[in-house]
Image (cartoon, rainbow, N blue to C red; front, side, top):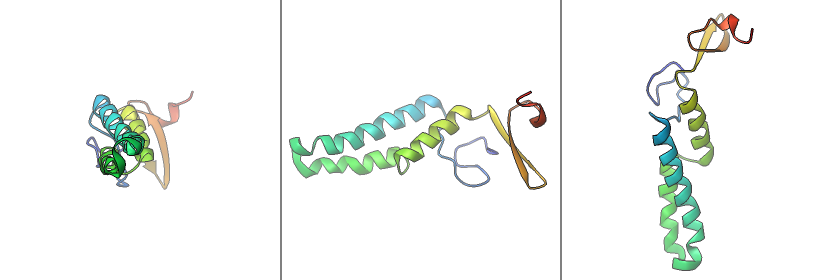
Length: 102
């Protein structure tokens, strides 16, 4: 990832949060809302489906997007991608790409 803030990668696909606790809260709200929207249908009827968009907004679209963002949030600052001559390598930040794994 080239950017230091969420949403600033070179390919435009950054789902991460500023911090891990923030991302976990988004997941709790998102999954709680999605599960609650379905689980509460027998109790309060279709009105419980109002929670569905809340869950989707909290997860920025889908549970898979949230999971990808979790991985990006955890790896932020630890992994670095470098591209030369059309070939990209992923390395641990602060180490030379050729030395990773040796």
